[in-house]
Length: 503
Image 1 (cartoon, rainbow, N blue to C red):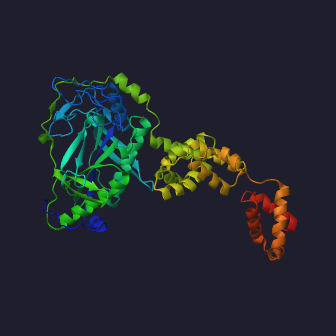
Image 2: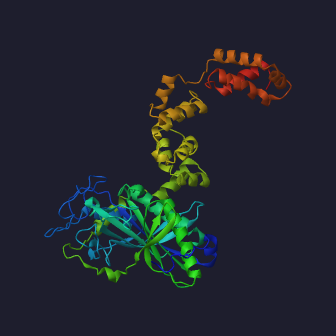
Image 3: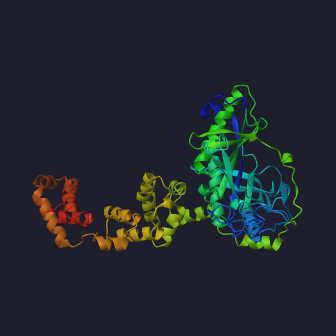
């Protein structure tokens, strides 16, 4: 047990006042290739345990690996998108320590010769501030299998036995390693989450991975260290492993800063170690004392030849890169006419793709933003879901917008129609027709309802005629009720004004 197990974390704000945090982030992304990194086993998610394997996946004696060319292509694309240099010659190495979920007892990775190096990415925070994160390297490797601990809390401590699923063993990975990220101050948790979100968006744009964090497609190891001031040497770091949500990344960084500050304030040294983040408590707990590179006994993989991507191929891939997320956001900001704040809200809500799809389906940008950031955002929040998880498509929202702007339905009915779409009852236009929800625009019907409202509310009529024109709303209400909310409120107002000869 660590000597500082019982030391209380320092309050976060106090910790930031006394210490300067420095981040380092290692992001692993599973590549969406058809097969694994070094063999022909299928790269699939959620298959029956130990069915997506070959003898190479299991590292059986006499098997030989072969590099997946598509994985190399995806790795180069990632490197280019991160402004990295692409190696003219690089090779794989064996990283050796006991892996119960890799039967060969080493991981085939890259050590001193990565495929990509010396890059950077600009990260935009919620208020528009840009933080440049320097990338040290992006290298290829294989994933490990999955351990399931039976008994106890599901962790290895207290388990009665463990099971191993080797389906994930050998899945292609790219690991992206930053250089130390200084000068983040109290925004360190936000910077860490925004950086990983930026990478996630890049992976999806490049179409190299589904990049679904809840599936483990993207996992982040978060290094945190503290020092007395920005001028002091770097402090001892800890590495919180496999954090797989943006919220958890923020919480893990925040907790580690407070925890390490508490340790230092107690006069104890921080131990360089791996740690595990617990979503239920927001705390981290000790893993193992962190190994340095020499402890892994790296040596060149003798069964694989070096990888030497031609300059022509690299330039072809560079020329074919899609528009990257930051450039796309700037373009859409100009095309849509949103304010900076509106665009940041859209991005933070994960609505950019949805609004773009809605605009592409025919809606005006502000109308698309109104529905996704208004009613749909409210529904998603109540359901504790992301916007993209809702059962409605951009095309359906565009159709709804068209019905409202064409005055076939009003906003109130639009919300009712949307609820039915989300319940799986069909597309908006079909629902309006089936449920007879179209706006009542027949003047004869509206005039009858207005006449009844005038007759039922003589006191309101007197106020209106006396100059209180705003009281017209008290007559519109009964008309809307009489037409089940399907009247065109603007037209109803015009009829009332004409009948009462006010205006």
